[in-house]
Length: 244
Ligand code: ADP
Ligand code: MG
Image 1 (cartoon, protein in one colour):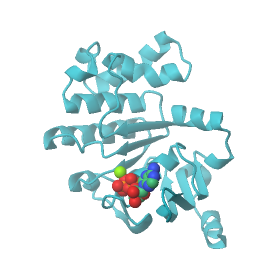
Image 2 (cartoon, rainbow, N blue to C red; image 1 turned 135 degrees about the vertical axis):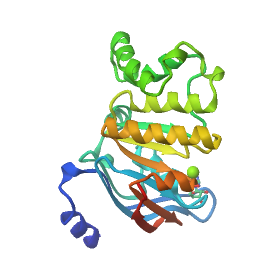
Image 3 (cartoon, rainbow, N blue to C red; image 1 turned 90 degrees about the vertical axis):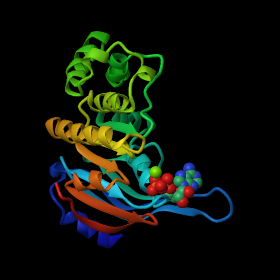
């Protein structure tokens, strides 16, 4: 613990760090023996970085994203997001932080089928308490940026996979999040759509000054990142600059 604390003291000033994990552990107890999905993991992500998280299936990537999103508490350790430690927040404040400061993108899009594309994109702003007019006004430029203005009134099931993921990217960014997390967002797309989605995510995150954690199996996706962090058994086993 003292080692980690010293490391944090020597680290970049808090304003430049979007995310800081200190000796984070996550254990699941289902049967007899606990599974350590994340094992004393420390990581510091500077603001605006586009970080690819790689590692084979079961290495703890999704668990890590869930912890950072505050969807699950860590078994030990600290998770600092935007200068606040998640474990010190009430459930309400943690939920608000997730809604207002984090955008999530999933492999299977998670768009709501009964809402139109525009309504899906506007939803995070509505959930955060904005008026419909304001939420719509926020969604509009994002729809344009992901080139879905013409599909704005369509239902998600009528879109291609690439279009659905572009809608999900717009939704993730609509409220100006500090952090965008994407869990294998191209896993269900053909290579052309995947390429387009990654380029959009990269460009939009840059323009909106969001930090990105991208979980990916794709070599090309990792190559677009500023930094590639590899997990194995819940630990960081490699941390290198990306090709971007
Ligand atoms: P990845 O996303 O890299 O494939 P995961 O984070 O999903 O890996 O899983 C890491 C480890 O934690 C695996 O051994 C997995 O079986 C286990 N695990 C993940 N979620 C749970 C859970 N809710 N309950 C029990 N074990 C889990
Ligand atoms: Mg996973």
